[in-house]
Length: 459
Image (cartoon, rainbow, N blue to C red; front, side, top):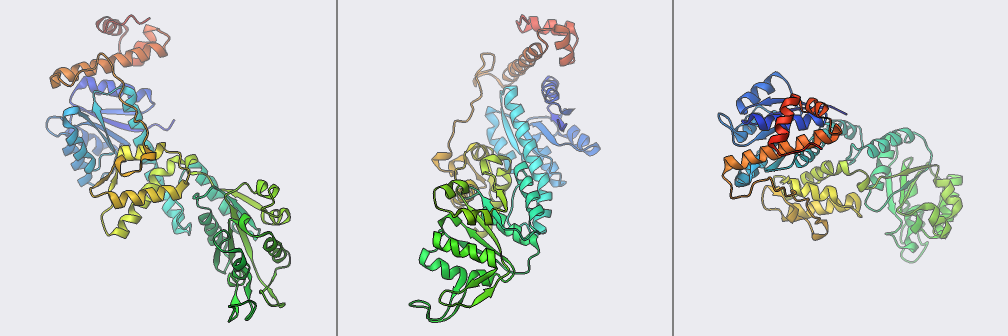
């Protein structure tokens, strides 16, 4: 596991200790601070990957700490802990750049999920530097640092310099044309990248689009026209949705690939072309061959190298990065400051199946930017199909009601968290009290005392 350095800031020593133990069980290194002043001193002496802070503290509270961090340019992610009565303050903290907030009382798994999510987001932001380097080398609009995308990048780099034809397979909206453009940009070919959507051009016009036509070749052909194959001039022609091309035209394309020459419609003159073809389909090409939509011999000629573009649901870790890119893009177009993507809105995006892939995500973010009039995009800015039950905080008889005084509420909450930790330690140790005490970093005698006070039998 990749150990992270986490700073826990809370004026209650018992709460700090409970959070420290839970975070250590997750495998992280934890340090403590009693308030914002101590927290800043700790951050001065060493860097942290995450700060987990209470909002209400003496000397320097959570809001002041967050302000101080941002004023000094420290972008360490911060999760704030807040009680039900101070949710407005938590919202203010989010506007100042807090990564997330947790409402007290909470269960340990709620806190652990928030920590895991924020650390994952931080990894995305850091690895984005790598992505920017890739973009500067001509990766076009590629966004993604997930494992499937890294594998895709490596494959593109490997096969791009070859002259071999390539077959790209992927669902609608996955970015097949972006892959084709990246292949061309990395190939070093001197000609143009020329895309043709075979499904968008009427069959009777597609041949002229590809190969051009002579003057008078058909009614309306009042002048000679150069086709896209010739226009690419030593570059790359991208045939999107190749399975929609008429079979008769597929036979002519096969001949072009075999002989390296084209004939304009209405002319018998052979014209040599230096052509690399990248084809793409959103169907299974083997099934398209069996169904008679794709000539078998053309498929073998095109399928020298096959590239499968990952689905968005297979690279869910890229969703925050993609969403941010689209937020910036459409905010610029509207001439406004980009709103923040709220935690619940991001959870909705990460939990959706994305049948329309990246294109659907882009459309939804564009819609949200248009509808958002404030500083944060919420789950309410997304259509109903993205709605899914948000895991409610599980009830616990030991947790306080909203009518309890704040001091009593916090005391009961801390005891409830302590009880959870003890139960978990006993479970992991097979009810071995000595082992559980070592895991909790207390004496066995202290554990027996707590078991008695919490009315736990430990068995």
